[in-house]
Image (cartoon, rainbow, N blue to C red):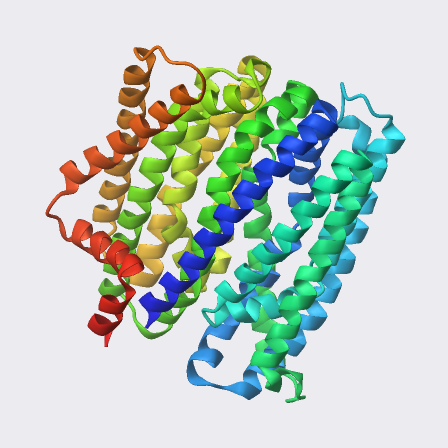
Length: 510
């Protein structure tokens, strides 16, 4: 049942992310054609600045889901109600804090923005709208977390994609008629609130008992929860420094307009990363349920298998993107928006590591090892900032991305040691070896695919299609040859088969 629910959530996630990616490309094209590079640059820069204020991921959201796993598993409605009441109040504080912190940064915006065609007053208004959009998104987030913990993330995913389709149509009309970046952002705020209201109403119908008062948590329980939130806050804040500072550093060290050029590439990368986030959310509930009922070798073997499945996906996607993303940008927007091959290669490695790490990161999220895990995140974010700033001064955008790669390597090594040593109490040597093989094999596939693509003289859409196929099939084919006949490949095959032939899978599970 855990696997079946995960598959349902993952399928919904793939549907949502596919729709979101298509709609995002439509919106980006409209922004480029109607508003130009300055608006694109501000959008990319402020999206990353606001991501630093995304407090849902800074402890509260993860603490909610972690503490709900056991009550949902045993049907303890009283405990669920007590937790939901506490987290409702917590999210109100989060919403207010997000708004206040965001507004405190308004006077300093001019220090990270340059080269754009807008006045600083206009830029500040745009930034304030980003702050409002973020702070209002938290008002019903605690109910969305209940769906995630109960392995029903697909419900919110489907609501999200339906509203997104409608909002993209409205955005297209606004951009073609009014041509105002500010009006466009106001529409995003409205539809963001609408999505959360609809999801909240659905949750109220599925869990009517959460509106009934069931008392309060004990002082010890509240103390434990807030201790977890504190540790998760520090851990996730450090993760934000790693994942959400590239555009800020590029703007400050290279130039804001360079952010506009890079964000077209990062949009493709982000679409894949968002797919990884959706899939991560899809398996979180099932993984949390597993860790709540099992320990040791069984959990370690499950993690091995899950990591292999994610490696197969991450490897093929990252190699494919390394080959075809520049031809795609040329077809989509033209040569003016193309960046160097070295940047593409580094971004593709980052993409692979970001996707392949999901099972390991998710295992630590549901393990409860928040206090020690936060120290690893602090080390990683510190290394990221130091290397990115130092190398960014000399090598520009390439140096910034090398800093991100170094951070991933350090965190992966330390997180494996923590998980296996403190939770599994099982040898981690096999898992380290897996990561080494997967990483170097993927880098080798990227280099091989790049050399093949260089000798193929094509242009336009055919260039994009052929290089995409070369990247995808070369990686997938090499991986199948290397791992053919292994138990991991059989597990991955059964997972993929169950997605397309659910009836046979359900019968087998029964």
